[in-house]
Length: 543
Ligand code: FEO
Ligand code: CA
Ligand code: CA
Image (cartoon, rainbow, N blue to C red; front, side, top):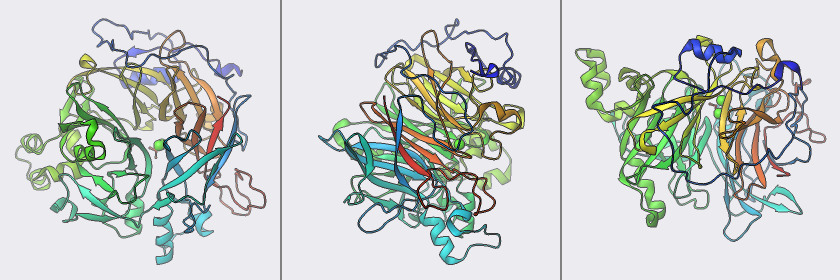
């Protein structure tokens, strides 16, 4: 192990501030673990008992190889790559795969549907050149087609996972697909009267609903909507899709707000209302939660989708430990005599469309790029990846843990701790997507931007990776590296099968820093006779 990366037992501390975070980020000592501190909201009601036990792999070292490096005994199968045919109709797999979500098929252990997000494209690898003077109509079409999502059918044969291109379920959802709006902004002036909009793109991460549909999140939608001359207010939403049923109307739930959505994580309040936690991946942006008006009814199945049409959206005020409701009444009251604000915010539709502005106005705390948010299946605490924010010296990011009052996702008060901080003391930088395993470990992938990888202060980390962090016990908060990405790539969308024997993972933007097509910086997945790297989804086995 390289001396600079010797991992020290990490420190958790209550409260935060730029100075404390900068100290944690640079590995200074002097902060004490106070997770059990006096006054902490305790998360006593274990929902599910973790198995614990020692790590199931020998951690790897940071690597700069153009390969997906895994611990000894683990292997990966490439399931689908950009451009692959996914169904008999000839639809093709989009570019820059991100979030993945596995839906097992009933009574079949080794077969299921895999939803995959496609976040953005590469002009160089799709058009063969960089585009400077605007796209042609044909290029716009490709720009929109290669974003959105794919439903693919996957199966395991003799131990190896593969895509089934003969699937009758496989299909594409793209920037060209008609999508309905629901909720307060539907048909409103704030979205220029739209009840249906064209397509979804910039699909970053997402989440599963309690009724087994998926939510895919529109993140950095601005450049695509501008290039395609589409209405900006029609993007930046959470979109619901049912992978098994093409007749389920794909819908954007405007009640969940419009911002640079990273993902969603759904839970239940103690009184049965649905709660959705969400991050807004921007520097100085807020953490949100939505609470439905009506209660979840398990028997109602997919009719529960209605719950996402009406409710209250809240932003987190970290200084007060409070969830602030984002209502038109509160905004107008706060606006006082400010006529520009009163003109902009007239109805709840204006609040959801201009969500970030309303949240900051009402006291939502600007934070360091809140990306993935996940609820621990073991104690109900909420983990938030704050990727980084160079605006105030948080270069390596941190993972925040929320403790809701009375263990209730419907609570209006919370406390929080910094669960783990990025930096050389912990071996990782820029935590992004999160998931849990049955041992109570938090898995995080990292997102050091491709232009920073292996340069300056990011050099010790090598390429981006996957890290495993115990959430309890002696090694709580310590990070162990499980995977290292190919050159320039980011690993995204980790998703375990229910038996945790397979981990689906996206390898996004390998070779992104390529300037000359004749000499790409990466050739992963190293397909025979290929001329370029390809974003691909893999299935990792060996667990
Ligand atoms: Fe698309 Fe926030 O990563
Ligand atoms: Ca992400
Ligand atoms: Ca990211």
